[in-house]
Length: 542
Ligand code: SF4
Image 1 (tube, rainbow, N blue to C red):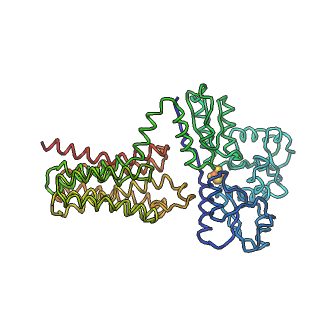
Image 2 (image 1 turned 180 degrees about the horizontal axis):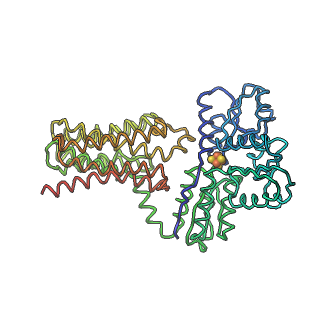
Image 3 (image 1 turned 120 degrees about the vertical axis):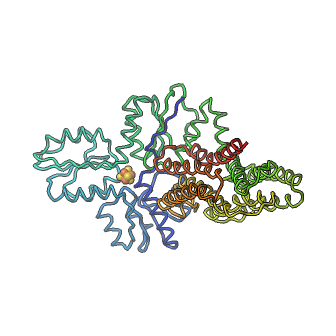
């Protein structure tokens, strides 16, 4: 079974913005009663997270729950001017989180109201976005949902035509063709938003060589329904799901090439959970799945990074590789570099520390054992300390530097050379870039679950810019350090991981690797380049 994940799947800009605004309003006003006007998105986890923060939902502006002084948040669909004014008159503070594309459409409608005799608003009669548009259009607005509706439009001199932002692009064109005969002057506006156009054209493109579509999104989400309809119109087998458990018992016999698509209000993590579930029901993916999980979750890849950085630290200090020390560093790192707390965390810690301790005791005696015990206790202390996630990343970087640079230098009784500062800068940059890239990928989930990752703390745009400049600056310094005799040639071995970390930023911004697990493996896997470069250095020096 071949699985293709649509590039344009999950939260659109407008929905994401509305959610961000909602959480920020609560942050800025912890004491106020806050309600969203309708569900901000149709996702139970998000609604739960909002409820936990004391943000309720009212479906009607006249709901008696809304009292003067309360805050009402307008969701991405927008609100009609009358309803907004009615709330303000009642003393309710209105925070408008309507999507800028919806507001742009309102401007188009307002302008059209001055010149046109009639404004045809093409969209779904029952969609809340249409209420807002009709409210702006006033008496001149009429709703057109079907070709039949279009045929019934009375003939006028000047007719303006706009579409709901998430309407079917192809159907809109057909409706416009019918409306051409209904007026002397037809003002057509292209108001279907870019996100919708991209999603719909991608579905039509995917339909050319996929037999099955799995459409992920809320049952009441209109844009998700629309994507499913488009796939069905192309005669494809369509399975609509809201959560991964709904994939159980699906008829797999008809599925050879599967396209996974999702609506604009489907959180990315729900899509990722569904993809994981889909892959795990695929018969041949059992072993592959276990291997991918192990690579993504185990401390193997960062431990290899620690081993590689320890090799470089020894070379920078003019020392030959000491395999006893390098092995002790690897197992010490294995005990403390897993990114997530897992069920087997403590047995892994105990066994790895035990191995590192034994190696160090045999090779370096009592002092070596003490160094290992001291270093191995730092990570568990950090895990139980309950600090914020962004601080954990910073302390984690310090522990990583201690493990891969300080410990091997102590165990080999090597004096610290000035070039160790360069290596420290590299390790800190590599470690924190990994943390930020993985944080960026989980931004939505972290925002909703209230986790303050380093990426969220810095903010998405600033974080990507900071990473780009830091990586470029460090790469330049490393590149110049050999000709300036500040570091041995092994320093060039640190450039490929930096290059691929920079690619990781592109992959994130372009969503090239959508699958969270694959992205984690890509980012974490870059640690493995460092020991490979260390071995290459050894081979070339022999
Ligand atoms: S689908 Fe388009 S118009 Fe609607 S919220 Fe998303 S970006 Fe805005």
